Amino acid sequence: MNIEERLVASAGKVEHFLGQILTTDDKDILSLYDSMRYSTLAGGKRIRPFLTLSVAEMFGASVKDAIYFAAALEMVHTYSLIHDDLPSMDDDDLRRGKPTNHKVYGEATATLAGDALLTGAFEIICAADLPAETKVSAVRVLSEAAGAEGMVGGQIMDLAAEETVPSFETLVKTHSLKTGALITASVRLGLLAAGVTDEHTTHAVCTYARHIGLAFQIIDDLLDVVGDEKELGKPIGSDKEEGKTTFLDFFSPEEATAYAERLTESAKAALSSYENSETLCALADYLLARKK
Amino acid sequence: MNIEERLVASAGKVEHFLGQILTTDDKDILSLYDSMRYSTLAGGKRIRPFLTLSVAEMFGASVKDAIYFAAALEMVHTYSLIHDDLPSMDDDDLRRGKPTNHKVYGEATATLAGDALLTGAFEIICAADLPAETKVSAVRVLSEAAGAEGMVGGQIMDLAAEETVPSFETLVKTHSLKTGALITASVRLGLLAAGVTDEHTTHAVCTYARHIGLAFQIIDDLLDVVGDEKELGKPIGSDKEEGKTTFLDFFSPEEATAYAERLTESAKAALSSYENSETLCALADYLLARKK
Image (cartoon, rainbow over all chains, first blue to last red; front, top):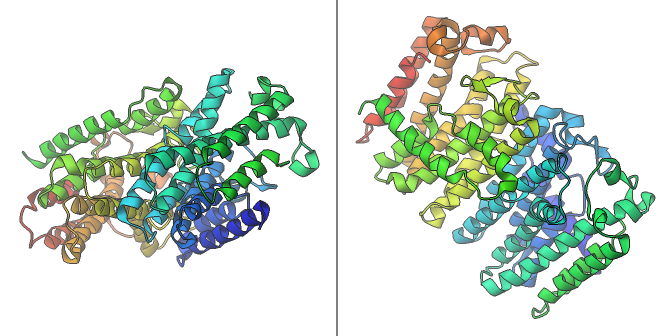
């Protein structure tokens, strides 16, 4: 399978698993589950669970064991999108071409669906058939990455950027918290599922994650300037229109491309001493070359 | 010490511990921490952590071990209040006589502060110096109690009650999810901190928690009708004015009092075969007799 086929196959497994988790027999809370399912089962690249499953497999774990952690990552990611889209936050009406959660279910239910997904992520980690030490480590890594010193901290910095134009360093830090922390947590949970705890390997795989995470954001910013509206499925130039500071405020498109290429090479280099790293390397190249 | 002195002493310890946790050196996320601290360190009875610490002590655990779990309970409770007060939810301007979180910090920061407190609750459980099995059990119990089939489910039912007048059974179920689940989780985390996992004791202590939880809600509803505005610190009759269905729609004040008394007796009876249950019994009586 090439990387695109691998991504599709992995996304299918994750979607199936999430669909099984997010069910209830209790009709009194059906609307909550409908809202949770609406956003969680809405497609998307499923990069985070793919990272968890790929790293787990690279180090010898089975999908059966790692998929609980992969699902937890996707639930946290989905909750963050639901809350981020709320009127008091980014106030977005569309997400992946569909009305945002609060547009369909109302703000109150959307807020609660996000809360329930975040809570459920920690519940599903506990359900994995893995040693207790592993599960505690997974809860610790995910909560640190998702919390005040991680993703939520990045969102606060993003809000602050609406008031004060951020410096380059602040922009990098915002992204490393807002999206980088969860991408790094994705590979760390894959390592944990495989029972890998040695510092050297953890450092190497986290270096890979940090570099692809930043490259991902640079390509996002680049596509908003030089992308193809049809392929992208949204008008280009929307970042500038919304007054957002992006990497294109610091680099020309050529410089940004070169920067993302360097980061991708560094990501792959971090894995050079490991066997079976083809999938992760192919993912890094795929994310660099993507047109949407 | 009498029960009121015990409550004050326990609240002081919990507040001190929470104050230590909720700090950061990172000035970029200070506003987030300010918002988290504003609501978390705003006083209140601290019933949930008191239950965790009292049960833990009753079964031989030290406060030092149990306080991580107690803090997690209070963080989840505080997040639920912040989100519940949001304009899209209950739209409350005041909480314990102070402006609500979003009135001070804005809706976006308040939403994120709630998210960070919920996430942080699972992080602080992992920091306890207790066996990994215990911490996994604590994460499982807390996430189940706080999530879609627990507190968040109760909030969804509460929203539905604005559309359709609930039956008595639905009212009881709403409260048992919205507030009862977290009160039961409080005693369960106390048992876990003390290493108690036997079913018989867990059942007895959970029965106690379920009964005081329901009695607590009945007294809340009663005080809104027959309470003293000065002691209560808010106008009486506000539930009726807001069109809320309460236990007083099904009972006379005398019947409601008798019902709460029976629940309190059942709560205490559930602990009758255990030594050192004086604190929990005194708490049950205190919550029944409270005037605010």
